[in-house]
Image 1 (cartoon, one colour):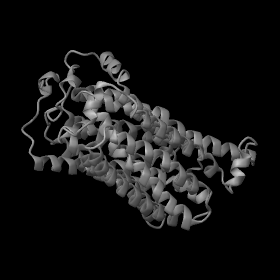
Image 2 (cartoon, helix red, strand yellow; image 1 turned 90 degrees about the horizontal axis):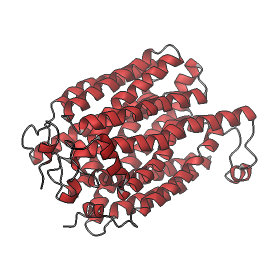
Image 3 (cartoon, rainbow, N blue to C red; image 1 turned 90 degrees about the vertical axis):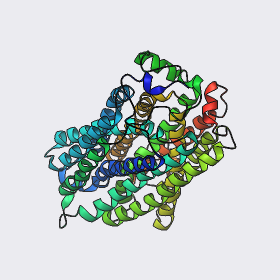
Image 4 (spheres, rainbow, N blue to C red; image 1 turned 45 degrees about the vertical axis):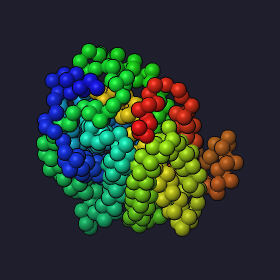
Length: 456
């Protein structure tokens, strides 16, 4: 097999990587991912406090979310290009430092533009880390262990989201810290973890990937345009990315607006809603991430395209409990429904990321991940977050639901006063579409299929 380290433009592995060190690296990446999502979702959890203090509308809050996402997606391809050609540890550590400082900076914002700039800067830092980490981490593990490794890595997402909600609920009251100091405090730990990331050993790229036909394009002899042409022609990569985009549309809206929806549409106390939401999101996401990675590895040993089955079925089924979550007025119903929704969301998270890094050459993985990030946000939460805010604000101003959807809204037991819950009903539709894209992965007949079969 061609030595990927030699084809990667002056990037060499620092030393042989032992099994024990691989799990140390997994631990570092997972802690970083935890802090990543604490920093990202602490803002969402503080929306009620920020709205009350700075008098922002739902539409303005929605644009704050899209500012982060837009910058995040713009910088992702740049970091992907650099990571396929340079050592990755320094790029990761610098990104971690940037997002941590930017999170803290949000706590000193004095007006809307200050906050907009701070949230956009968080997107720069996270673009580095999120783009590089999956491909970087995959080089520490054999293909038939990547589902498990990604399961651990992505389990940090619900944990981070939950900690964000819980910390916001506990620290944000003015008699404790207030929302400004809360943002400042949660940004500090990332600076210390950036140091740990800087000293990670660089593994040989593609060491565990045995399919030579999948490594004909090298970073040394290919332009960025050539790389993108390869990705566009990769059927399995395309359908996985489209399915992932539709899930991100739904998950991004739920994550960003979920707490505010419980407060404004369900009438819950903000602190109580924050803590309970954190608990249910943690349990659902943690169990889903770990089970998805484990189940994906086992299924792939028996069924070609097993990752796609898990992703497609879980995405389509999650539309049901999400609809129940948005329409039910009873916490005894909608909180368990949130648990099931999040569980199904994250059941497919490790498998889809394993697909993305396994169906492309090892030496363009960062670019592939960056392109996926660009797609899932441009088509996903960059659209859904402001769209939900716009729809909610429009319903509030008009005082009524559009006649076209009024019968459906009435059947679900919702009223115009529950504008956020109504606006978020666009998300279950996206999940059904996502399931369709994922299941298309089972219908293809291209050479990349061999990479998805870890049976041999």
